[in-house]
Image (tube, rainbow, N blue to C red):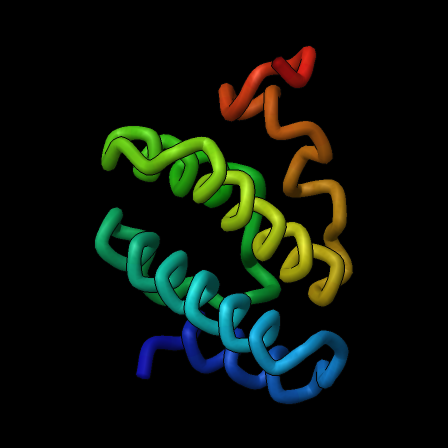
Length: 107
């Protein structure tokens, strides 16, 4: 098991908040993010080493894959949860529009 994936599973096990469906979706989204980062060449990454550049790389890859805005927004929400859990809430910007996702005015 890759280091980041292992760290994420440990963080998920320690946090029992949320419904089973929410926790399952979070586990799936974060595992996908870990695999995507590994595929992009970020090997040996640990959860505590997660930085803004990794978020930017993920968003760029998701946009390249043609994922819908809603899917990217949901994945960013899971990354925000991760950032809070590792004590780095500022690495994922609060507004999705700064990543080019969705409309800044909500239309």
